Image (cartoon, rainbow, N blue to C red; front, top):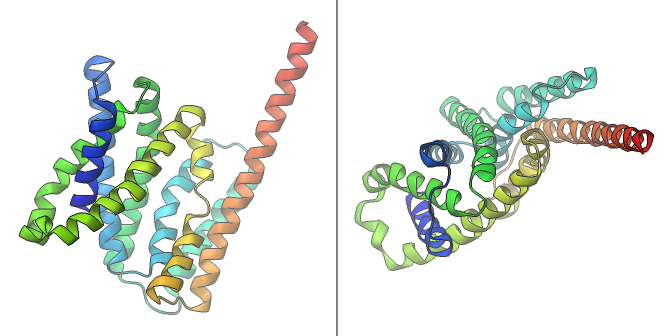
Length: 256
């Protein structure tokens, strides 16, 4: 985790040469985003060390999904929220028992990820380029450094480890975080949260194909329930956006 964030910070800093715009407010937003990233990474890695990847990713997804439903006034959204809650119960209460510490860490990671979406949007709007992201990731790397040194020590400087960390940093931090920031410039946090709906299914599939991790049938049903709930919320969001667009078009036509 530490090397992933450190290498990502070096790459992003070299690309953007960040300068804080917006004074202390901009710096404060970058620090808040970096803190959420650091805690998210630590909690998520602790979760996947104790849980199957699909279960950990599903529990982590509940943060963005709760954010996606936040503020909705539509009754069907309560149904999707209930279905997602049922999925979590299936994941945590049937088949192979899930480690309670792992469940707690995955839940904390989900809360941090939901918070990062909110703060990340403010960062994207406050800083027009990738400089804010570079500052946030740099702060996250500094926060994670004591943990990395404690756990790995001098192994952090092993050439093979550094090479692998560089690849992971670029593919799983630099590229996705940059695209996510650009998405947050254009989307509301609610819509962005909905669009992360495929993460639980992808996590379970990767765990099955590459790590040989298996979930019980009821736990697969839990993954499916969370995915179905997110798809239902996505369709509802699309209809709501379409209705708003139609209303705006009709209002414009009347004014014209």
